[in-house]
Length: 331
Image 1 (cartoon, helix red, strand yellow):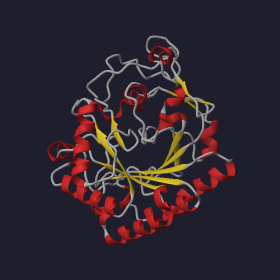
Image 2 (tube, rainbow, N blue to C red; image 1 turned 45 degrees about the vertical axis):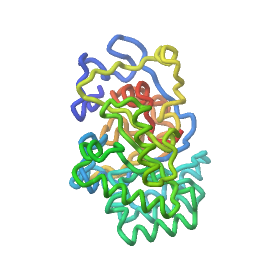
Image 3 (cartoon, helix red, strand yellow; image 1 turned 180 degrees about the vertical axis):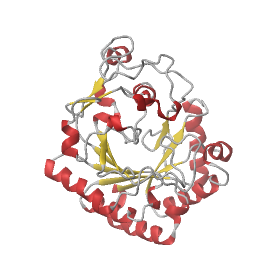
Image 4 (cartoon, rainbow, N blue to C red; image 1 turned 120 degrees about the vertical axis):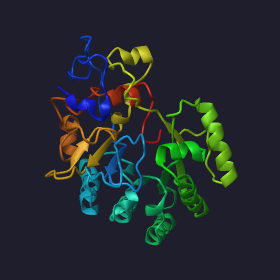
């Protein structure tokens, strides 16, 4: 029984939805996604953030420490495990909260980059990133590792009005200042936008393109890796459950889902050990814990998993990934 599927106010019109890990409310076989290969390992650096966004997927804020700061030593253990298991992981992603609030962030980046991984950082590019010691550290990493370090900056809309509707007053210009600094210093930069306003995607991309040109940022608004526009999860809208038949109906492959190529590590406050999860969207749901190590996650069985395969028994699985086409990892 996955009662935690209803956190953050998700209420299916049919109360039997997302309850049974194997069978939908209509009695059909629930879809699963096997790990094809571990391309990206996400490290959640902690849920503390310098701002509070209206629609934050994991409710990060200046006071939410449900996910504690992970340490460099704890993150390093997973890098060692990747090598020990011979996994084909090419990228380490860092998300939060705001990653640059974690005091070990620069050390964790260096650990990943020095071992040959690409590093992707999801940041709001505001004050935590713009502190002089952080800037100095980032410049050194940029000089040493070049484009293997990618900064994906959250710019929810290309206008100040709508960006600040989501992120709060006086956030737009501060984010632009951070992006200006990154562009001026030759960092590889991507942008993460939001579709919360229902704007047609071509209109949104054109708006971002105009802003990029105005600021002189070398970002291609038509490149879906350089500008990612994330789908929204509206708690007021009922979502269908995903069955095994949906792959054919929707002409989708399970291998296209985020959980086919990535996992995330979190440090839940007060927990005895870290937890591996199938994706970045379910940090608090105990039902989706896959163990404390990557090896345990590969063999997870029972409940929401079948020998490491993920059963799509959460509204996010349907709304964000299968129907919304969302993914936190680059395509």
